[in-house]
Amino acid sequence: MRALTLDEMNVAVGKLYTNGLKRGLSTPWPFLTKLYTVAPSQHTLVTGYPGSGKSEFLDALIIELLRTNPTARAAFYSPENKPYELHISKLLEKHNGHPFSEGPNPRMTATEAADSFKWLTSRVRFIDDGDGAQSIFDVLSDKFPVEDLYWWEPGHETRNAPKERPFFLIIDPWNFLHKDTSNGQTEADYLSEALGRLDKFVHATGAHVFIVAHPKLVAKSKDGIQPVPTFFDVAGGAHWGNKLDNIITVHRPDKTDHRAPVEVHVQKIRFKHIGEVGLCKLKYDKINGRYSTYLEAVPTESYSANSKDW
Image (cartoon, rainbow, N blue to C red; front, side, top):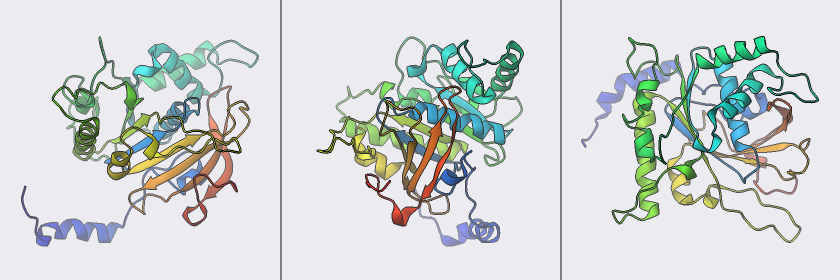
């Protein structure tokens, strides 16, 4: 630890003044991009009740980020989505736009499936947890090693031009990670330390890390409406709110109707040039797992997570 003088930051501040504050990568949904962009060296919490589609939403986002940014790469640590071949089949559907399996709708052809698989293999890796649950410290260590995944082709350094070569790490879900509190740590202290390690990782690699975490089930109100969960409903809530750069809740008020809109609540944005708090509604296509815009974004000044007007 040492004190930094402003003179040491002179060049960096000058570059920032000249180049301006840049937004992150756009999402595939223009109205959501008004609220949220994917920047390097940041982390995003994605939460929502079981069945809300948070993993489906995140998979769709990653596929489109990879499609629109050819140099981008992604790694999934997703023990909840095993077997991997099933998860891959859903990613192929999102890339191709047709069902993977036979059914009432025309499925992708064998050639199309092979082409999508080839496209996916050049951009995506899965991190296998081996014989048992791993901790976040294991996932971010040389045990797997994630940092080497940042540059898969030989001859590159792990830290180099993250804006030109975006890397996304998806941890889905956080609840599956092993949490070792045998040394007397409280769960809150462990979470604080774990998120601190995660923060060091994103700044060392330029990666953007997405974390899916399940909230507790909140009781319905008197009128039978399920409140939109927030980071306070995820175990260790205050730490998520304090340490994560961005927080998104995926919410489906009516899970019985797949035609009903999916609500994407952007509940925290640390830096205002990246986006703003608000709500965007999307349409979910059950046939191929893709999303499309349903309703224009509701910006900060009009937004309330549990407003009856939206």
